[in-house]
Image 1 (cartoon, rainbow, N blue to C red):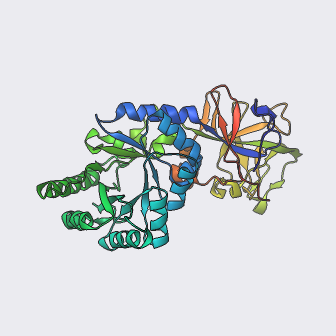
Image 2: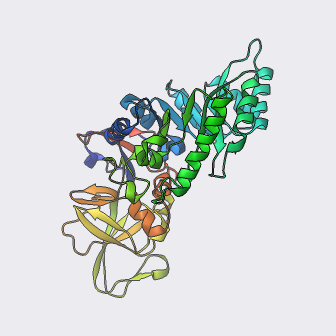
Image 3: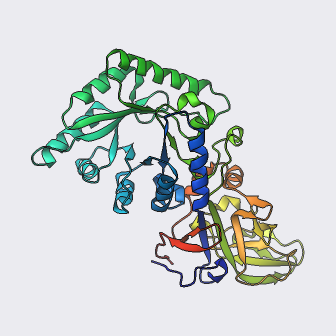
Length: 404
């Protein structure tokens, strides 16, 4: 584990070539924005899978719960266990499909709550609990997922009555909620989302008629939460919005969201190159004139997409600076010819704000033909996560070993 002996000022972190800063104040603010936006009675589930989209699962989950979230969502059993080992007691929904008896036993032991998507899977859970615990097995809350059009996980929505009835009759299982997932909630055209919503409503009506309706219902992801209050039901599952990004441009003004993640690095070398000098692998950039170039200690092995080569900008002293040449595994180069008095060790902002200038994960996503979710999840853990308070004090967050 890494540690900082003097964390009172970011300028003291000369030992770090690059790092990720996490603003827990931003996370807290974003939770408050969503809480105020929810339909009456709806709860907020903070989705902290994939290490909280690269922000640090334990710390973000703790902050979200303190700010008013009541549930946590993860994708895998180990992700849920990590939160339990950290002492978090909130209900945790495992949203991925689990089929192995060893994982079933772990879910019961760590008091996680699984998603069931088929009768066969439900049988595995019920039988494993009967076989694994002496005496009376624990009664495990389970959440049943319907496929209303995502075509990924879930029982066909038209089989909802048979599915809920089947699971409800199995020993050791207690149906805690019914849910589905929307495929196009971030689209400006709501037609497909409305079809899925109607299918979910049809399933609800059929279950209510048979007196089989589970106690809780949930459907909305971040985009749906921002779109329509009718989609909020008893609980919403907020992922991207928790981290301060909008899932679509047309939803960006619904709430005042603040990005919680910034990526910083340091200049490790400065040099002056004559006109005609090729820079980096392949010489995809050749200096058109004499230029001053800064080498920065971060690269594609840290999560900076190589596709951004010769396309991206960074911020230095509040000014935008062009990246030049191919981005390499551990380093990238900048044209700093127009900046004065730079020194090795000066800080560079790759994602984040300096003054009135800001570069976002959406900027990188648009330039590389991907989505901001992938950008956030791409920052590797050889970049220390540093918690930044409003006063700019820092403390280490889940600092892993640095692999050379």
